[in-house]
Length: 247
Image (tube, rainbow, N blue to C red):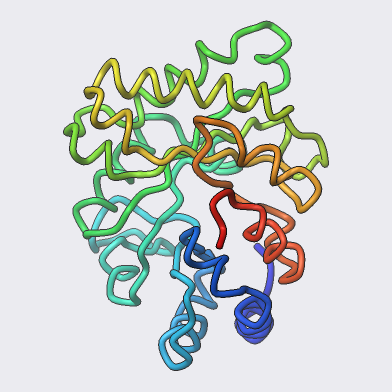
């Protein structure tokens, strides 16, 4: 819940100035502004033909109806939104969203021809109890329940430990890799090797220019779900520039 529509426009424009051709050739870069800024940001991206994809932070699972205050997937699709975050740790922790709710949202996003970014992650208490793999396995299995192999293989999974969101703390690259490898193995075991190979797995949790290169160099980490650093165009561009294979 940051940046009004005017601020969001400025941030996206500044980000586009700082991104180099090699950055966007090596990675898909998406921005996920608040609902009130989506139309404004979409207009800037389209008018200036910016190499940035538009995303949303959340959605409801119904296409329309008596759900005052909610935004439907079809509304987002009409704005050219490509990615929708579902099950973000803050939604799970603060808004009470469970795996069944996340599953309904993921299905709705896919039905609207967009890509869900399905988030999973453990709390500090769960981590200290050595339950990380148990928790993320349960969350991912429940959140993707009933999806077909080709659907799972084409979506994005984000591992974002709750204890690292907005705290300045982050998992070591090795710890992040271990959990992301568990998630990839789970996808491969349940939906097939092809899905396991093609699903994009991100790490999110205080990713910044200082740690991005080491995190993104890990074998099973395909990208980053950038939080606080994305609010600053300079920091966000520096994270993008850390992507391996940049040319």
